[in-house]
Image 1 (cartoon, rainbow, N blue to C red):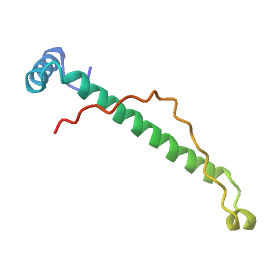
Image 2 (cartoon, rainbow, N blue to C red):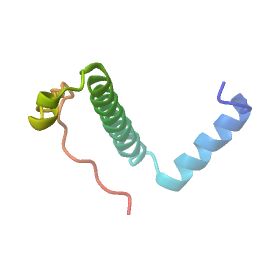
Image 3 (cartoon, one colour):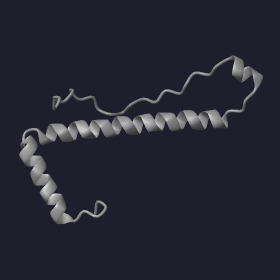
Image 4 (tube, rainbow, N blue to C red):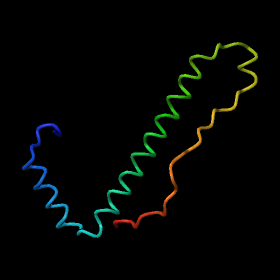
Length: 87
C-alpha cells in the first residue's frame, strides 16, 4: 500500500488524526490539502511549459532582443471559499 505501512498501521494513524482534530475539522483539512496539491501541480506544469518552450525555441538575435510573452494557462479549477486555518 503506502510503503511499508499495512492496513493496521493506517487505521491507527486515522484514529489518531480523528482524535486530534475531531470529525468536523477533517473535511476542512483534506480540502486544504487537496488545494495545495492542485496548486503544486499547476506550478510544476507552468515551469515545465516554460522550460520546454525555451528549449524548443531557436535562439536568434531577433528573439533575444524582443522577448516573447509567456504562455498563459487558464485554470479550470472551481473556485471555492478559503477553508478555515488550523492555527
